[in-house]
Length: 285
Ligand code: CAA
Ligand code: NAD
Image (cartoon, rainbow, N blue to C red; front, side, top):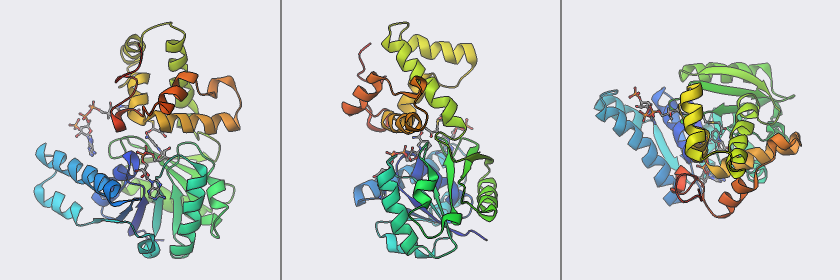
């Protein structure tokens, strides 16, 4: 099917980046949030990125204007009726996602694809509350979505080949490289990345090295662009905790168990870069 109208639900770190990328690639984009303040924040993030790219001379002012004309924010989910593809990028909570999928299934035209950007939760649990299981899949972008080249397409036991092909073509049209993963917790990348970040927290908890030295070690020793603590702050400590819990639920192996310090950080409201409080802003050294 030809995808023209894209809906993105959730205008946080990921949703705003996905909406930006889709609008830049020629799609008509509708972005939804829970209230006006958060919608404004998400739209400002998108407009701010285009302003930054225009200031750097990477896009012209005319292009920025054209992109701005292709994205609109809304608080009214009924406006999603004409979408060909809806990408869910709300918080990493299965109950919230299932409620949203049920709502979307009742509103969005039949035949349209409902996709989740979840980091780790089972896609089939979202598909199961809809009457279009074959048109539900994961489409997992990486942070920052406009920059990172990978998209994981996650197929459940019910996802149709047509849906996978449509999503593969969509990802390629955004300039991304798709890989296909089965619907198991963490898919490909987070199944490897999350235990790596959890190990770094345990290493620090056990007093084996400072956060700074662990980060320097991985950057200079392995050529990673960010150390694990910088990446934790960047990804969001809340999102990392919820993703770790989801993987641990499916694979109850100590390697996937969230360390106490991560839990305490989230309980203390330290979510990382998104609210200015993370390992590098206020954590005990
Ligand atoms: N739109 C378009 N381009 C953008 C952009 C945006 N919103 N934001 C930044 N860019 C561009 C910049 O213009 C810049 O381009 P040039 O180099 O051509 O000037 C480029 O991206 C890099 O940006 P910066 O110069 O600001 O920053 P940097 O060079 O320090 O790189 C980074 C930043 C890309 C984030 C890099 O540090 C990096 O790759 N970090 C690792 C990120 C990572 O591992 N992400 C995966 C997280 S895990 C995940 O996402 C999965 C999950 O489920 C949790
Ligand atoms: P975030 O906390 O930055 O943003 C989530 C947004 O969703 C919030 O602004 C919230 O108000 C909004 N929201 C919640 N319920 C909603 C609803 N019913 N309708 C509309 N909006 C709603 O989180 P994020 O980092 O953008 O993560 C979003 C999703 O993407 C999660 O599933 C996460 O696991 C996944 N993900 C995150 C990353 C990352 O690095 N942060 C990378 C890939 C995937």
